[in-house]
Length: 141
Image 1 (cartoon, one colour):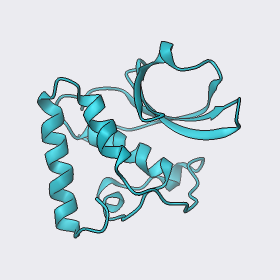
Image 2 (image 1 turned 90 degrees about the vertical axis):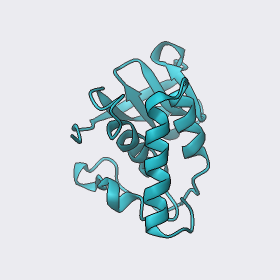
Image 3 (image 1 turned 180 degrees about the vertical axis):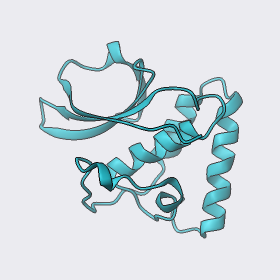
Image 4 (image 1 turned 45 degrees about the vertical axis):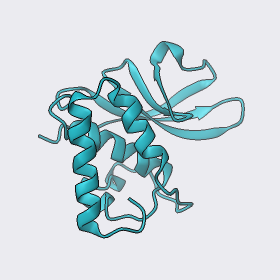
């Protein structure tokens, strides 16, 4: 979604959501998509609940902070029929070994997206990754 017109971004994002509906490995497909996004060093404040960006404003971006990528992941899942009823949360987490902050997406308290561009279960997440704050995503439909 880098450096293309807004209308093209909307179409690209819609096609992704359509593909997620029947893909045999939807989380891998979504992770593959988000790993291609251009990242930004902009700072945002995910600790502030008012900082949540709405989906249509978010896809206007040409680059994304890690928090915005987590938001886009959540919105993408929530706007599919397949996952619209799932419980989706962003966990602001810290890797205690290297003091790195990360924004992990939890789906139904079992699937974790966003750790090293992998799809994990909660049980597979390393013990040194500690959730510091949970941001529940309200349903979109």
